[in-house]
Length: 279
Image 1 (cartoon, rainbow, N blue to C red):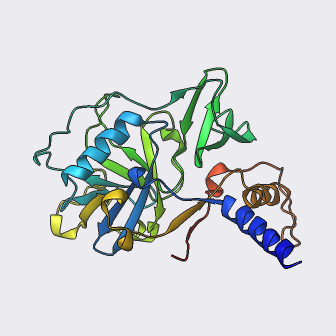
Image 2 (image 1 turned 90 degrees about the vertical axis):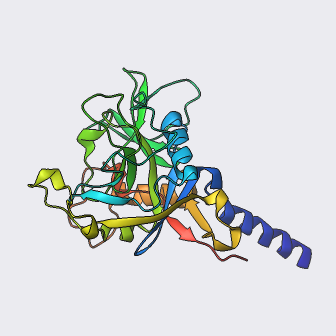
């Protein structure tokens, strides 16, 4: 009997563990801001060249001491080298990676048909994503917390500076910007950055002393294990996540008098993130 109980306990533990995944430390970046730690999970499966350049800049120490110089309430926080004068070996303009080709091996998990900005929405490797079968393309969506490279009018002009979505999802930027990651921890520190005035110089904070600074940026793999957060991300194909989505569709709660139309806004359903016990 004790043996059976032990097996049952191990089975339950295995099921519970399968609900969560641990981000790859080679594709996770720790930003230390003056107010605290921000953790970014990278998406090389959609924007491999942007991830490669960003991680090279991080490893070079390029972002250390720079700041978020353009922060617009309800829109984005843009960081990097506003002056363009900081030296780097990794400033080559990047070819746009707005989308990736849709193939037969895609792991896209369909959630919603006929989204306002995409024929289909769902998840790619746990990231909120869009897909167009007719165009044979899929992409990551500009939900709050998304990280993408800034650029000029030229689609292939992104180099070093990046932005984080801090307001309503600016979905008009989908398929127009190269999304390469998302904040999975510490979003309150990004939200707490000093703001610029969107009506003046497009939200640029002219006085450096008034900007929020990046103290350091490090790959998680370069951070001592004892100093890393034990972050776990809910699997989008897990039973718990599927239950969340179904509850969202049905609005099966007596609080809701209008039950909606069964459709979901994918940005409202990011995978949950937890800090697990170290033991």
